[in-house]
Amino acid sequence: MLNHKGTKEIRTKRLLLRKYRMTDSEQMFKNYANDERVTTYLTWKAYEKVEDIKPFLEMSIQDYEKNSTYHWVIEYEGEVIGSISVMSVDNLRSNCEVGYCIGYDYWNKGITSEALAAVLQYLFDEVGMHRVLAKHDVDNPASGEVMKKCGMVYEGRFREYYLRHDGTYSDALVYGIVNA
Image (cartoon, rainbow, N blue to C red; front, side, top):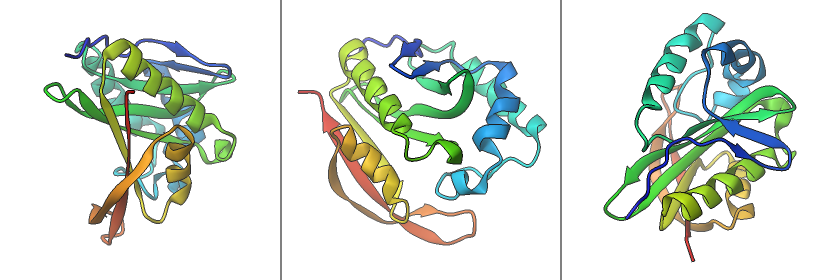
């Protein structure tokens, strides 16, 4: 049985994972949300104006009222540089899916792996998750490397799973980890 605690602040060696604030929109826009390199493999398009982020922030902040919401800002050296979230929580089976994104200037620095490892530990140790999965676009292998670095194991391929912004479909590679 899960012990939902919501989005609690998590500190790692270099990062602060915390709840969104309305004041985060400018740093989000500057560091990742307006960059098509970041959103190429995500379900949302790059934002064109900083003001367009505000409805997302309002919705995210409202969702924090539910203790089953897990949606963190990734803050590095005082800057909001990305996010990591839990989706599809299955209370009956004690499992969920996690997803993340991070600004292009912060790729290949171990930051996403550090954030994912901290969230996995929180989900297993504090919330009581039994299993966590993550998926990535087949053309974004770096995301799979993050998953593997955190102990996740390749489990399979969903053919033509993602509908990209350009209208094409791509396969999703699935990784999972079980709380031992």
